[in-house]
Length: 310
Image (cartoon, rainbow, N blue to C red; front, side):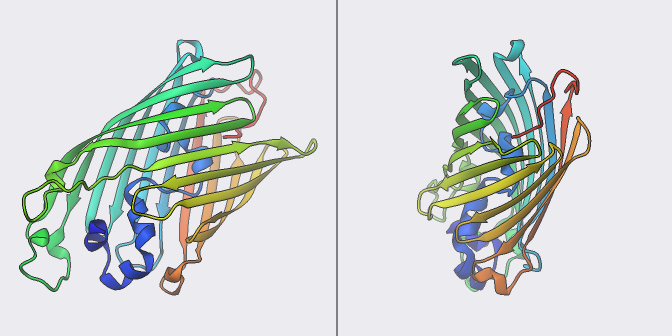
């Protein structure tokens, strides 16, 4: 609950607390095309270098609501036996700012002719700031709000597993197993009270070919963190002629999601998602918007004819 005190007024905290608590890790609706942010084992899972840019404006009209900008890049190494990636995430929530830069490494084991199992490691640093003096609070003697936090470095380490073949995937990850956040976790008594908590992600998806024109891709992501309710994303996307994705999703206790993605050419994809809030915050916001640009570098349109499924 400490994060809530730092972000939004008490009234909003009371009606949206579990959504805010989960915001310590990246939350996006188009996660199925941006899995490096969830799982380091995803790095190098394609035969070519891949990247994405994404911006998410959450809970429009709510002062201090999250604004997230992300960049990811990954590529295979050693003829697909390994993968490496880089991610940069900038999060703004209320009076806090968090710039997260991480490197990702994955080792891919071939299980048979069509599938692989990858194990991944994530190591990075977050630069965290919070202007606590900008908050309005009632207890002027509360030591939690006595000083601002300016560019405090926080080392982070994570782990993941990722199984995949040409049309299916399943992964399990803990993006932050450990965070060296002592500089921002000191409580009023001088004891360490961990700020960044472990989040567990289970994500999976599969593509079914319906006919020559349509493919169907159901996917899900289940998120768990201690002291907060389990949250699940359930989505279903339809691919038309390997060019246009249309999808609907539901995030438990939070939002209905509509998605569209267009394959501009063999190298570029553009996507958009709109979250219609279903929680009690719906009386205060017009929902959330998310735009994405995907880039597949070095993808040979002649040799690699299959579309980008995930």
